[in-house]
Image 1: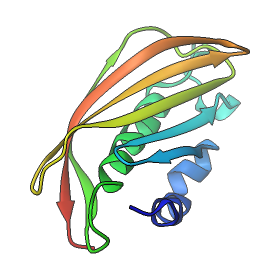
Image 2 (image 1 turned 90 degrees about the vertical axis):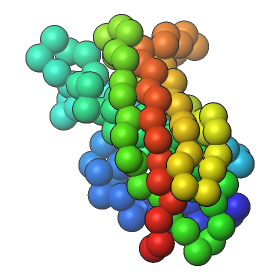
Image 3 (image 1 turned 120 degrees about the horizontal axis):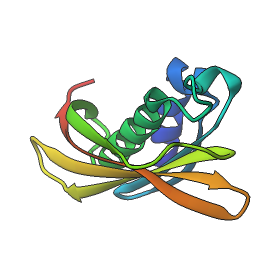
Length: 136
């Protein structure tokens, strides 16, 4: 696993750039991505839009899976679900993606998304899904 490989891939995601997201941590089987709550990523009640929550949660889980794959493989989301637990209100959202079960054909992953305000964090969503290793 190379952090550089994941950073290069992350930097090519125009959606993450649009959302102002940053790649905060890369460890084998674990990746953290955060994004500010921008005026352009809110829903009508002023909280983070679920699309922001889902996007960073899915990407964190996918990169966690990629961190365990050989250099000659990439990863794609086969399916992922989200449970929205609370409104995303705060300064930033932080998604922590983790590999639950690595495999050669399927990788089970999860993400927890927290809203952060100052020093306080609140769990606002959990995602669980399946990533599929693919050829680049």
